[in-house]
Image (cartoon, rainbow, N blue to C red; front, side, top):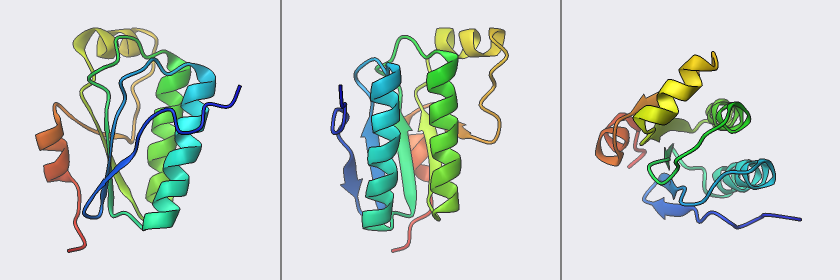
Length: 120
């Protein structure tokens, strides 16, 4: 099953904004990563904001995919901020030993946008 295009990617100026509203199962997470990287290549976005407010569960695989996506985006010249990680999700990730080191995070979309560069 191919999950391409499952999660919409919005462009706001030179920032890509993604609000994840569906569970990120393995296939969806991988397709999401591919879609994001293709959109970064297509647009040359300066920033990427991934909003996880709608997620109740993030397992270690999905956390790794998100962290790897942020690192890949950085290699492509796009700064990434992940926002909206719920307290229970953060606690679960830390208990599992996964801290998402090297990934910039913020509490909400406003704070995340303030952390991103703009090429305008």
